[in-house]
Every structure is written in C-alpha cells, then in structure tokens.
Length: 365
Image 1 (cartoon, rainbow, N blue to C red):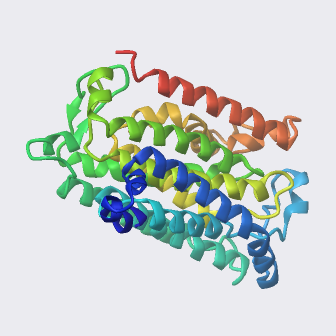
Image 2: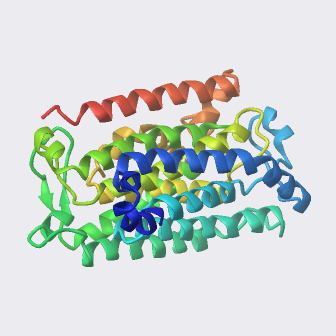
Image 3: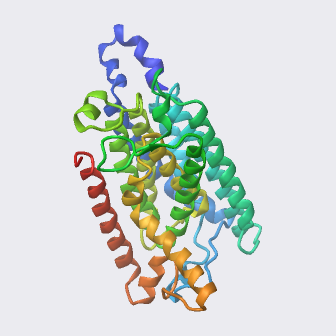
C-alpha cells in the first residue's frame, strides 16, 4: 500500500523511489511483522489466558507434555495479524499473486481457528470433525488451484508455462500437466497444510522449521521474478513473482516474532490457526514459482513427519504392529530419550541442511 501511495510522489521527494525496490520492501516487511509480533505478544498471551483459550494435551503422549495442558493456544492469530498488517503496508496489493496467497492463507487460518475454538472453548473432544476440516481444506485448495489454472499471471504466450512441471537439476520442464495440474496443486496445498499441522507438537518446532522454509522460498521467489538472473541460472522465469518474496518475508518475520514466545517453555502455541495457514502458504508459494518438486527436499522435515504418521497408521492396521515408538516422528525421538529441546534443535539443523541443498540446486543443471 505504501508503494502505491508514495511512488507517485517521487517526483517531489526523490527518495520515495526506494519503495519501488522489492529488496527494500522485503526487508521492511520482515522487520515490521517481527516487531509487531514481538511487541504485542505479551498482551496477546494475557488476552488468551483471560479467555481461557487453553491447549488440551493428548493423554497417550510423552509424560513431560502433561504440564503443558492449559497453555494458551490460537497463537496463530498473532502470526496472521502481524503478517497481514505488514502485507498491507509493504506489498503491492495490485499483484494477483499476493492477493491470492493472502486471502487463501487467511481462509485456512479461519478453518484452524474454528478447530481450536471447538477444542479449547467448546470443549469438543478432538475439535472439528476430521472430515469437515479436510473438506474445507479441499475447498480452499481447489479455489486456489482453479484461480492459478484459469487466470495464469503470465504475459501473452506464456500461459502454457503455468501448468508445466519443473524438476530440480533439469533445465526444461518435465511435462505439461494440463488440467491435471489442478488436482496436483490441490494435493500440494492440502498436503503441506496437514504436514505442518502434524509437525506442530513441540515448543518452537513448527515455527522454527517454517521460518527456514519460508526464508528459502522467499529467496527463490525473488530470483524467479528477475529475468536476467533466471536466464543466467537457466531457471523458469515468472514475471512479478518477486512480489511473493515480500509476502513471505512478512510471514517469516511474524513467525520469528511468535517464536520468541513459543520457544521452550512455550508461553503460547500456534494451534491449527497457525499451522494450517503456514503449511498452506508454503505449498501455494511453491506452486506459484514452480518449485513443487523441490519443496519435497526443502520441506523434508514436514514430509518426514507426515510420512511417519501414514506409515504408523498403515502398519498398525495391516500388521497390528507399530514402526515408531510414537508418531509423528518428533515424539519417537522424545520417547527414545532425547530432550524436547534437543529434538527441536536437531530438526532445525536438518531443516537448514535441506534448505542449503535446495539453494544449491539452482545452478546444478
């Protein structure tokens, strides 16, 4: 918004031109969201405590988690609010990418909020019914996929690129998915949304890994929108995709500010309000910059967490035996004797390593 308001005035005040630079607005968006989350965090936590929006802890989980019962949840509201204010200030709101990402992210957060509210306030065991939550995730994911498919944000002659599947380490697209792209993108959005939700089980784990993934995607989005850079690196160029990096910077900054209060011992949990939205925004951003396959590497921690649950459930139903001590994967290591902080830090390290591998793939063709 500031760009639209102040850019016309640059003929009178020359330094207003700085608002045209994506790099400046990217940094400003991250700092703004971080400071908002940090400054309003204590007041927000007190507000949640006053309303008694407490987290319920699964009885079959690690014994050390029982002390967390009653810790304020719905911290995702702080992330979404800080991100949204920063987006309004620093993003180019005429950019279709930003508007679709922002609105779909907030929609997923709303689904998570209803689930959290059902569990913590209405005291409904398990919260929103799984099939209902899954239904609304599909609706939002499908709406996003259809918008991207029927209204590709690309110059004339490049609409076919919107449905092309690009694979790391390959110069040319593997295939054109055509109408199948809608189903593929739907799977990505719903899958990442639930994967981050499953990862959100330890203090700072989901928020920390999300920051790593979001920061890497922001870099990739910035590069993808620069034609000269993509030509040099032999990468797909998506016009104006660098604006996505401003949105992701705002989201990442909000996560860092939230992490200040979510670090062990957590004063607040993000809940489904935050995890569903974070996962969905990560998946949608990867789709818009054609990094869907690379996301499997970059978000490897989220993938491992989701796969551990799938394998655990499948093995128990088919063989009557469990593969892991407990799923998701982070609980397996906890029950193996690792302290919660050790699990979180080591998962962060793995996340950084995977991010470096993802960045290294840019020039290995």
